[in-house]
Image 1: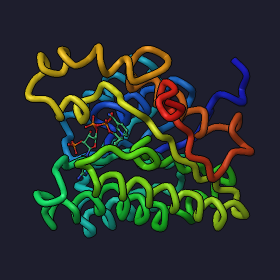
Image 2: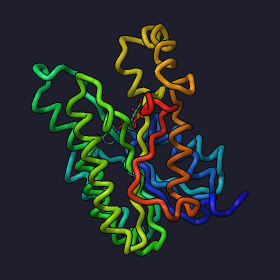
Image 3: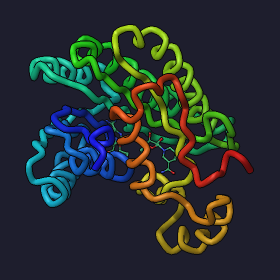
Length: 259
Ligand SMILES: NC(=O)c1ccc[n+]([C@@H]2O[C@H](COP(=O)([O-])OP(=O)(O)OC[C@H]3O[C@@H](n4cnc5c(N)ncnc54)[C@H](OP(=O)(O)O)[C@@H]3O)[C@@H](O)[C@H]2O)c1
């Protein structure tokens, strides 16, 4: 393998690593040679499943679970302290996110606040809290998981769309600020990816499957995404093959944004 595509010896942190895109990303980071992946989420049980998957893909990669509710600013600070105490971080993947789907009149202050807290404030806090470690790395790479909805909205997800659009502008701003310190800051924009978050829009799996043909057709490539599709793009942005890429919002969307 071309070593530019490997992550030998790197230490990564992935939020929302217990399922979906975050889980696939943790496994792929390990498979591509990361020395250690720190797994963050609320459910230690889900994170343990990811550890098991990592052990199969890359038995030498160390996995550390840090349970944390990223809605909670105090828990975020505790997480940052724990990671700073380990002394090394090269890759930060801000992946945890949530969506509350509702028309404007039914959108509550609470769902707006929670969306902003998890999708926007938590990534900001983590980058700010971990920036010195990332600078020490000299190869620091931050990848924020945004959404095509940041640039091509659908109705009934105004808080989500706004949070992801703001995440994009934060990404570009911090790319400017942190580039001189050797830290790259990028985002990926997935369209529809088959994860628990997306399936949550439907009453049950049967309802999701009934819609799946139509969902596939929204994508010029002819299918909706799988978590691994996004994980592969994140791993690319994390490593040296992307050394001259910063401040981008990379669509990982089967071509949806060109429709
Ligand atoms: N799936 C899609 O179609 C799609 C499209 C575009 C963008 N995205 C973005 O992709 C990212 C990952 O989503 P996904 O689709 O992979 O969904 P997912 O499988 O539901 O993963 C989200 C993860 O975030 C964690 N999480 C949720 N709330 C948290 C909190 N308060 N504190 C800590 N962790 C929390 C969840 O674990 P716990 O519940 O254990 O905490 C879960 O493992 C999100 O940012 C989402 O907006 C997804």
